[in-house]
Every structure is written in structure tokens, then in C-alpha cells.
Length: 364
Image (cartoon, rainbow, N blue to C red; front, side):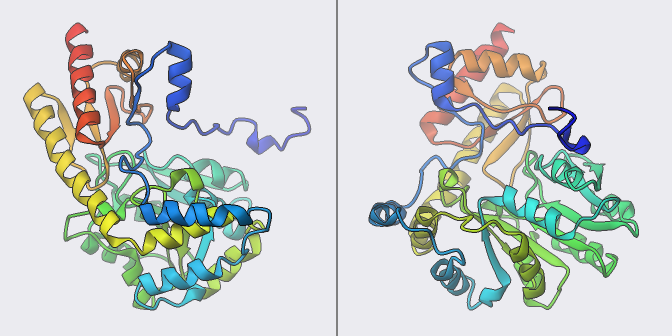
């Protein structure tokens, strides 16, 4: 079988998500498990989205609208009249990265991406026999100057995860302006903005504004998985020049966004009050976790997203396993030997996390 598979995928890493709650309950015999590993929305989706899901269920025997027409119109209105031809929906941000690879990468091309960051940029480039050039962060932030220096005549895509996952840090508008000013005309800047709704820093650059101002090299990726709480339905979208969207449409799988996801996403966009509650909870609970980290003397990186990277000063896998045994799922494996990431949850979840972490570090 190995001889049948394409040689360039033999050593591709399989994506490993945060451990599911039911798996941990089953493996460890635990009843109460708190999952703070995958940056999910602790308040869940809007009630309007849940009602839209229920109303859409009887029609699941029909194929979904392959063009996501109604959702596209709603998102266009949500962004103040954005041209619907600048919008493409997909089965989560991961599929959008895959579509960009399929549409724009030839063997021998290059992709420039930060490290650590969203872990799909590199393998999906290699899948197309392209070369991934990864640039290390500087002080836990994307180094746009270094990313720019890594661009060559072979570079087709540069990924800018902003806020960056797993660090929660951002690059500023002035930094992005300078970066885009030096980008070759035949290269795309892909802004992965999965967490942009959570950002408070006024220096944050809205990738959509570059599109509005006529920059045809910018692609913006966003999602309904985080702030809108629809991770289980798998729906994200790209905003880009209509010509770029047209090329992505050519490699899009038919019916890639299911009918339930479309209905829920459309309703979620209309519930601004729920979105505001989610953002306010995240802002408030981040401050709670900061205070608790300070109390415990734990180093952390202030975050513009819904997660925090912290330094346990012990082997991250040891801490991960010890927390898991006590029913708290967090996330490590980012290349920082003692640093782990925790999702910002509800007060009850955050208190459970802090109590368990204190217990683990004290015992250690």
C-alpha cells in the first residue's frame, strides 16, 4: 500500500485535535471533565441559530445550496454591502487553506508561514509538492520583517495568523502596511483571522479593510467555529478579490457546506446580542485568569484571542497528562517545552482549571 500512496504524503503529520470529553471520560473513568483545549465558545451558539437548525432538519434529505446563496447575501449585508462575489464558504478554515493550496501551488512553489501557528499551512503546502518555509516567532509574535525576508520569486502564499494561534498575539496595522508594501505582485497575503472578533487592541488591522481599499493580493479567512459557537457544524469563509474567489470555486468540493451549517450561520449573524455576550465573557474571564496566574507566579502571554499561553515551568506533556487525570483538558505540543495553552471558559470552568493547575504544580 505504501508504494501506491504519493511519496510526498508518507511523512505528513496527521492533525491531532484536542481530546474530546467523551474520550477522556471513557479512558479514565471520569464523570466530570472540563475541556479547555480547542478554543471553543463556552456559551455555545445563539438560540436563534439553534432554532434555525431545528427548522432546517426536515429538509436534510435534500442537497444543500451549493452556492450558499442566502448565507452569502446575509454575510454581504453583515459587512455593509460587501460584493457577494468576494465571498466563499467552506467546511471550516482548514478547507480554505486546502483550497488555496489546490488553486495556487505548483510543485516547487513556496509558502511562507509563521511557527508555531495554525498547524495546517505546512502540510497542505507539502501535499502539493510545494515547499513550506517556516519562520520562527520573535518574543511570541509574528515577525513580519522576517516573513518578508523569507519571500522569494517562488513564493505564492504568505500566511499571517492574526491573532496568532497558539500565542494570542497580534501584528499591528503599521507592521502589516509595511509588509504589504514590499510584497511581490505575484504573491498572496493570507490573513487567518479566526479570532478577530475577540480583539481589543486598537492597533489591530482588519484584513477586510485592505480588500475594501482595492488590494487584490489580500485573502482573509474567518470562521463561525469560535465566537459564533458553531465548531461542530464546520463552516468558515474567505473574503478576497472576485478573481481569486473564482479560482477557489474551481477547486471547491460540491456541496461542501451542509444545509444545517448554512441555516445556523445565517441566524447567528443576526444575533448581535449573543455575540456581544460571548466577547464580554471572554474579556472578563481573561482578566480573571491573568489575576490568578499572577497570584500563582505563572508567566503568561497577554492574549487578544479566547485562549492564553502560559508557562508551567515543567515538561508540558507531564502537566498535560496530570491535568487530564484530574478531568481538565488543555493543550500543548507547540514546540515550547514548558508552555501550554488554555481556552478561556466560564468562571466555573476557569476556577476548576486554576484549582487543578495549582494542585498539579504543587504536587510536582
